[in-house]
Image: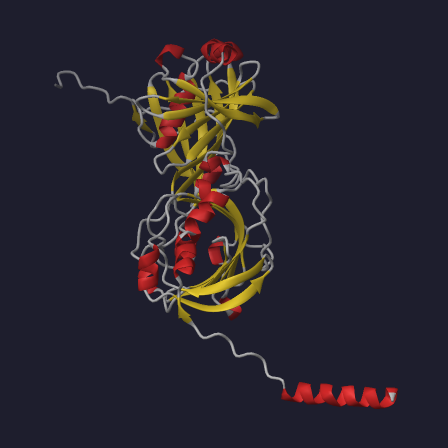
Length: 470
């Protein structure tokens, strides 16, 4: 009887397996009111959650590009490792804050990207320009545009032909796959979408092929987005909602965030005593890191003598590695000359050598003052040893570290510039920063040192006047 029961059960199981068919998938249909409201709330949810890990694949096959890192919607900040065979000149690390983009190129990086280090490297960052509408530009716009401070119109989404497509399961749990246009419309906007914007757009917003697909959970959290742009190709965005560390912008983007406040009595006293301390210190060796334009990234080295109110440095433009600009600032004004790298102190464009002494003869250009960012920064460093009464209102931005010392970063806004003084706890100035025309920060690092005699630059001889000549 047991054998007969077993045979009967096996026969029934085989017949059942042969006759079984999966339930047919649910057909696509228009969004319900609840689904439309969830999709409309997606960007507000992103802004509320502040940050997420992100993995983007652009294109397919041998030309695809991958981005791995994080997006911080609360501060419109991206921090990504760019890799894959199609990465091109952007291979390496990338940060974007609002409209500003900096990269740290690494042509020798492995093709497969990995999450960037949480504390970004301090060196080799430069401002970079992406052609609008192509390559990474629309993808970065898209990532930052995934947040808003108010819901999108739910009825407009349903009226646009949005559909429920399927159910799926991701690492975080079950989701609905919805098909709908980019929320808020697809009209192109300027790069640098900020929280509170009313449209999720890209530079190529009008070139979206078909309807994007959203993997959305019951709490209006987006886990995956797939779309296609005609000038870019297919784009797959995968979000890790549990991977949300606090991100640190690099120095060119302002450094890590702080909580600005008024100066304490001790901090104000150190600021007031700074000019006298600098004059007593005498001088410093200086190192320049200055993103003064999307195509102009300066590096430099030299000296500053506060007693003689003189600065002398050699600056290299990363885009013109075989040239150096020698700049001298003193009480008479500014003098500068462009020379070959070998005659301007040598070194590399990334780490130029200090300028030659005495200054070489050449076609020096003399002006009383300069309005470019480099002239303003060097002029502010020389003037730091002057009267403190000319400074504007000061706020303490944050505590930081420079030259192995704890410093207070103090920001002053004047009629001419926005400056940050990095003052250590004994009152020495360790760094001076200037907010440059593109919106980035240039740094002049100062290391107390014995400064050589900074001889004046050679001036052209005055023409002799013949007797009787007018």
